[in-house]
Image (cartoon, rainbow, N blue to C red; front, side, top):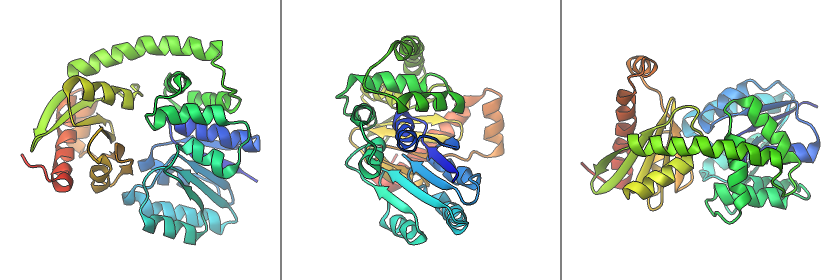
Length: 313
């Protein structure tokens, strides 16, 4: 039986995958992705596979393609197990269950907590607590900040898979390997924060203050960057733009509604969506003329914010 994992790229996603690995002992393929690319990853899953999807919700713009590939996998003798903690529409839940997906959506915990709870992974409480501490922004376990930095230290699938295998054996101890990586990560992190504070800009929409910033691909610290910008500028919403997608963070607004109107999803205080710039903006981005891309990005958010939050210029 071919066992395939598709999971998110952050600590919660990697920790969720680590619990799957710990439960079954091996994974034949591991894919790390963002929600807006889930259908692409599913398309690459071989027929007859047993698929585990963790820490990824549904983006409505790609839901039909997701269903097509789920049908293909199930129709070829495979199985699909899906564990998540984001906000789902009831219709999505119903349709996937009717297709035959074993779906577990539980908003009371992080995704690692969902896997732990419903798959019954023994001796994993320490990892779940650390992952939930960061992902739910509880900040009640200092190890979560260490593990988050360890997972995000290097971009790319090879490092993420290394981290996943490391976390599968996590017993609650922050060892020297993790500590050494975190020390290097913090040095890089401080430079990223300094850059973000210098380059961030402010827009207002009907009294709603929006701080926005274009994040480089290697800057993985989305929630940390957003939190600093919200605090520094006293903003209501932080918009973190990047190539091909957008992240929204807030302490007071339901940014999921904004993301949903843009074809994305997530949590009320942390959400995101894909971005599809036209050819001219893509060329400008790759030529380094990124201010045009950034303004286009935030303008799209303001447009949808106007329709969902009743703000007006």
